[in-house]
Image 1 (cartoon, rainbow, N blue to C red):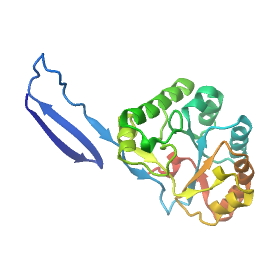
Image 2 (image 1 turned 30 degrees about the horizontal axis):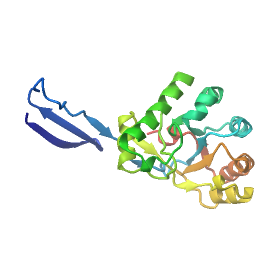
Image 3 (image 1 turned 90 degrees about the vertical axis):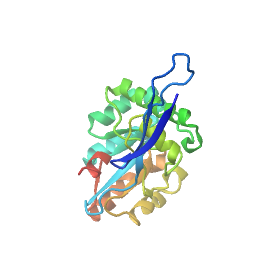
Image 4 (image 1 turned 30 degrees about the vertical axis):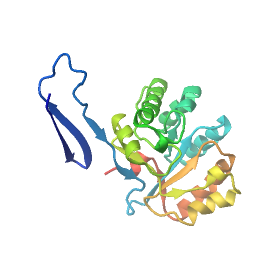
Length: 237
């Protein structure tokens, strides 16, 4: 059996394609599959938009998630929840509320493990299982994917994301530091002292300090004439 393999670059995505001669029925080899690799990470939007995206890693105690969603609703802003599959599985009503109130619901892997250190099959399973859980809970597929336990992806993560149907990974360029559980002013200042139009800001549902810092952050963003929006809105053409 002869195999002609070639690599094609098209529309910014790496596609692997292969053609083969007719297979011998007794052959143990099958024709290679065609895989799409997700493109470069997206960690910011347009610096001319006047918008920023508050993105929350989705898991945590009910009272914290409820507080974040209540504050977003009261302020009339859009946010993005990058949901962990086990959280959606346990708390499907929260996932449905995110979408009902006009926010984005993304995929942040099934178990929030260190995805950069996984094999390709393991990483792909982590993403596809989370997608399945979100679809079962909400009836909708997640729009976006964010790698777990890392700010940036690597090739294996992008291969897994592509295999799971995502064209790019959504990361971030501004860290609120809320996961360290510092004093409220530390989280507030980490955002407001650096924020600029187009930023994608990393925050968390599972930390009490985030619930206290959100209102001052929203006040500061308004003073800077920056509008918090969903990832979908931030990246809109």
